[in-house]
Image (cartoon, rainbow, N blue to C red; front, side):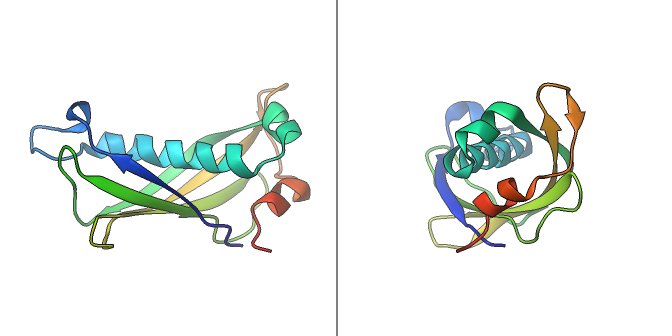
Length: 132
């Protein structure tokens, strides 16, 4: 699987910590934002009405950072098919020079909105995120 999705994030004053660069918690917010944008762009409307996602695990490598006014290009993709209710999503953030400065692998679980329960990822949902 490898339907790649990208977007750009720009560091604003409220994103900056005492070290003068983007706070680690903001990177996690951006990971959620790109995952949500990818879901909204590629998932069928009927799937978006029925299913939601929750994070069960984050693994993040911080190799660099950006300061206020600087931007990163985020790229996300799903490297493998789901395992039951869960699948991993990778996100790489590249600085203006194209260097990966933050890299993450996040495990998400599918929730049935009506019941509030974790459920197996249906094949038709997987198909929306597969490379053609």
